[in-house]
Structures are given as structure tokens and as C-alpha cells.
Length: 18
Image (tube, rainbow, N blue to C red; front, side, top):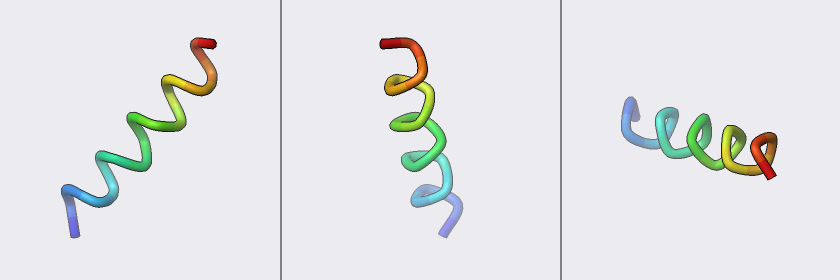
């Protein structure tokens, strides 16, 4: 579950960065 949360946060971060 933690991994999924991290993955979602990472994807969100990348989207925000771009």
C-alpha cells in the first residue's frame, strides 16, 4: 500500500514539475 501511495505522489510530482 505504501508503495502505491509513493508511486502516486511521484507521478503527481512529475506532472507538477512538467
